[in-house]
Image (tube, rainbow, N blue to C red; front, side):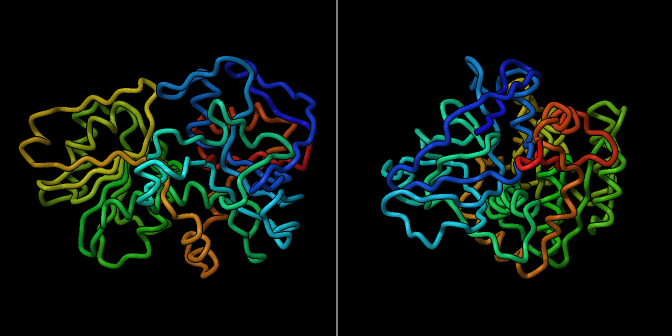
Length: 349
């Protein structure tokens, strides 16, 4: 089989490898499509994300839809041939946090596409069968990929306990921010303000139901906060979703929050640190929640998608053949108009 290996920042190579055999409890997946996540872009751009660094050539990628080619001992044969969405986090299953269902914060969790667990940019992949969810025939391959980032957004909403009538700000309308907006569209009576520096993304947000959009391109932190607060009105936002992971949104998430506001920090920074004013959010009694991936949200997202209330396909803007993987990553890294979710087609070379 072919594996796409990130050999160094911004440089891929295609390697040949043996197709893996399934172990007990595993399924062998023929990977169909792989989405490029912001965390993948961090690894592509600099060879690191947070404290994790690539020590050598490595297969990245974790958002994927696949077809089950074979199963190992203990896995029902009826799974063979099914298309599946993949939960990429492999928790230990027996630590105190796994024991109470908080598998996303398992201290020894392994994650597809993060060392030491090779990712989805390969034709075949071995993965625990219990972390697979069948994709109904009515959903496309592209939709199957977007289920994973949609699951992160749903987990963030679950943590925030959004209520009808609240004012909500989304800082950053890339893939995750747009997924948050799509899910907020299932609520009634919210006022939703979306903030970005790319007008194309804000136009998409407005078409999806945002009450107001704010373009902060070229503005400094104070100007961006002032313009956003003017769009919110009243005392600020009851709930803020920080989805960009850049210094300005990290600073302004506290600036635009109302007293007793709640902030979900979803974005991942290049610097692996967050800077914001201390006194103002302290005086307002702001609550910050750092969002760690997703938690039992893959199946609920599938159920919502089957009901036709999530625009999964509409979030995919480019599908690039596997043989042009560097082009795909450059697109995902550029934030250009017309680019939102980029997929790699592992069946086309």
